[in-house]
Image (cartoon, rainbow, N blue to C red):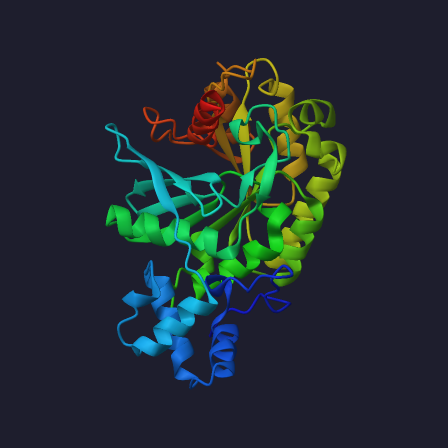
Length: 360
């Protein structure tokens, strides 16, 4: 059964044409039928797009006149790998993709025993302002189109030769701040004629956009919701994450409990360990209290050093983990991958931005 999430047909800005690769199969088929083509042409074009063709000329089972007409009406805008770094430690690949408008985003391809996971971006930049994150420096530029999220998966797979089985929406940007496009991306990447990556192999991260969490709960998707918590108390969390001033941590936990009741899906809570800020025993105890009645997993993240931030990695990560586990909360320390290649989110894009600024 095909997943259908799109509530509205794809709309293009005035004076432009819709993005062909962001279309669902049904929309693509309808567009081709308007051109006088039979319905099966939609399936052919859809399949070619999801194989990663860079031009209509590569669609070799279409007649040349049709390829020419497609090229007159639409443009294919595949990303360019502006930079590609491969870790000598674990084979992690960090991509800096340049998009058609010159903007840059990042993807990270990681290999585990259970398969290959790609962490993709959902926006160019980010407006959430989290104190410890390099992605938010410079703010948000724009949302990514569904096709631009899809292309990160397709072209990373083609470039690396590694079949991607898992997707994490945890790169540059806040997915809930671009939720309509993210849902359409999920519909596309899940399609059996496309990459056919199931919802249980997708993790969607949010800094705590409560309306988005509630909307996801209503959809009942079988993906993994990952909440960037980083502090269980309002004072600390507001200092680290401005979003807490809009959606307080108490409201966030309430939405998480409601999400679990509706979906039955365990939530993963991301927790960057910051020295002397959020690593006290009382904060671990408060996490335990807030999760009571809901099976949650706490993923402790060794903080990355961001040059522009005064925050430093905690020296109490192991003790914090033991305190959580001693009270029945599942807690792990995230395995660090790609430490020699700027693999943490936003670092490579930031260097590229600084280089461009230096050239002006």
